[in-house]
Length: 55
Image 1 (cartoon, one colour):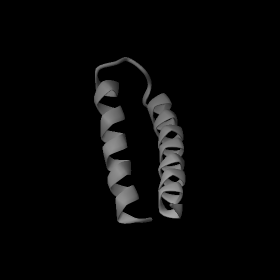
Image 2 (cartoon, rainbow, N blue to C red; image 1 turned 30 degrees about the horizontal axis):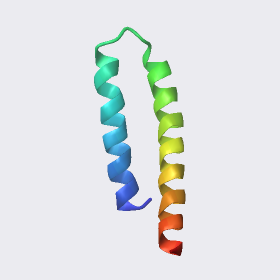
Image 3 (tube, rainbow, N blue to C red; image 1 turned 180 degrees about the vertical axis):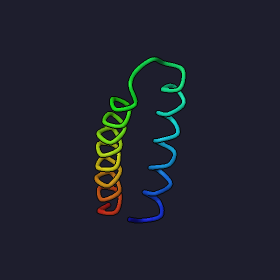
Image 4 (cartoon, rainbow, N blue to C red; image 1 turned 90 degrees about the vertical axis):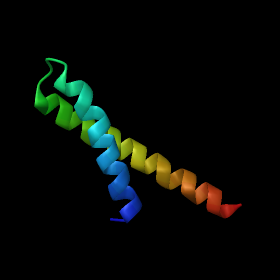
């Protein structure tokens, strides 16, 4: 995994963990939504990088 994606993963997990600490939702829900959300974000980042490099 590229170092850039690792940094993004840490920031994404942190940004979703903070609101989770103040809510009453289960951690299973948080884990699933974090995994799906990061997957979507990382895919979008990869596609946008490819589009930028083509120009």
